[in-house]
Amino acid sequence: MDTHDTDYQTLLQLRTGLRRFLRWSERQAEAAGLTPAQHQLLLAIRGHPDPQGPTIGDVAAYLLLRHHSAVGLVDRAESSGLVVRRQDPANHSMVRLRLTRKGSQQLEALSELHLEELSHLAPAMHALWDALEQAGHREGPEERHPATPERRPT
Image 1 (cartoon, one colour):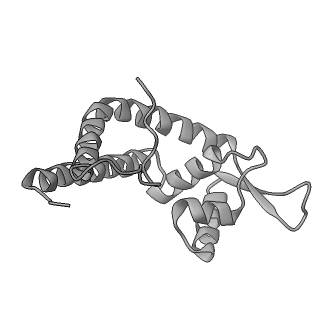
Image 2 (cartoon, helix red, strand yellow):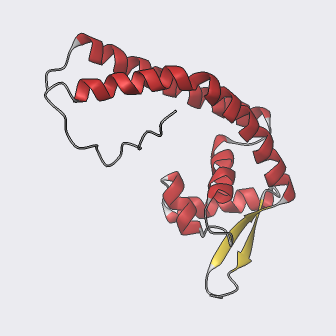
């Protein structure tokens, strides 16, 4: 692939946009009285598809943490009244995580802000993503990369 100046500019814009969003997100979490890691933990628990809740191993995978680091994060969140551990009813050796009312309320407020911010960023991010996809297909069409989400028609 022949990398052009515009490719580097597009990559820079995308990375800068992602960093700005992440910095904004961290500040929103801190303003709500959470650490950014606690916010991510709450989202990992609430977004987990199993209604029983995730295990600490699931959370570690979502947050790209080692198991013992996830345990420490959960310990601190539990001490702050944000999450609780519950024994899995079907497998008593497994512990599941659930949000408390306080954790749910804080996540709800932050998620509303994040969804609104993302709705403002979406057009610019889509344009940058499309430019990067076009750059990747200059030498001819290829199969979609496994990490590339499928685009839904709008």
